[in-house]
Length: 384
Image 1 (tube, rainbow, N blue to C red):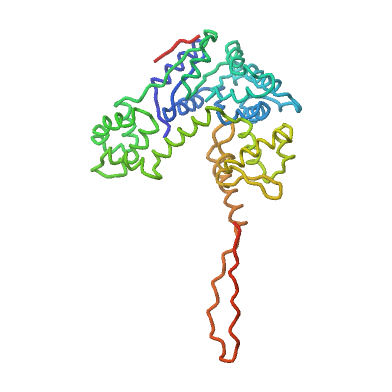
Image 2 (cartoon, rainbow, N blue to C red; image 1 turned 90 degrees about the horizontal axis):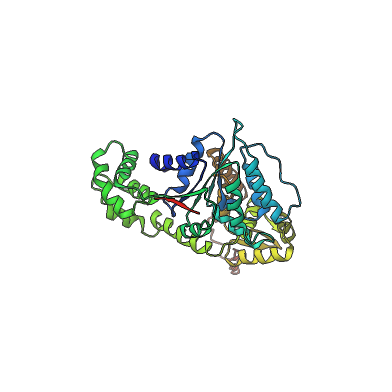
């Protein structure tokens, strides 16, 4: 469910139209990405980019952004260094134009993930370089991040063009409107559950949507506390969402952009040898070997006959759909799932035929020898 928050959208739009750069800050599940997607859909000449997915290596990030671009752009030149690729990305942001010839608008979600480039030569201060360049760009930007502390620290000495907008928690009135969107025929129910749901979820949009959906399917005698308990049972969506946020933040405490890049390469084509992966990654075989060993260590990839592939084919499908700069469309999902299903169903081993009906041997026949069973292998202005 994409939560509609008209008042928040108007605040962000007002900052944007004043010639400033709104920086939208909100934790996991607060509706931050939904806000950007709605803004992108409502503005001509706007482009949403998921930097958490695109920021792998500078070269592959440039390729991903150009491939997804809604604006006229050529292909990235071959042989660019990491620094040159990053500069080319910023040049693309500056040069992009809307259909009416005016400046383009880029909505950069999780923009601080650009910090994964800091391990590459010449990009030690890449986050500050990005902020400085965006502040002087003729294009328009809306930035967003789930990492409030990091962004405050980054913008402490930034140019005054940036304006922080915190995503507020949903209030009971907004939760009631969401409840009516779930079940418009039960207006009294929506009014009754709005208060408890707001309190139980702390007004976080994703948790509100989950809890309301569970309550709506529970019938007239729905109990918000019992529904919350169900969400946090083993396998419940509430527990899964919190686990994702927990693991995501622990991972981002360090971050491995090159590892994401390799997973992106293998999502495009597998299996690949070390040399082939290094070629796609544009890194030396020595460093690529280290990256591959780290992925093997956590069972994300496996190697057979010196060729690397995903250990989990469903994870590969997920990366093909979501490991890029823009979210997949319905057409993308149907295409990729269909391709995945076709591959799995045509390569799956044939089912084992049923054993034949045993026939008693003649009395004179010798007893058959036992056969062992075969074993298979397996500068901030804040708006609150």
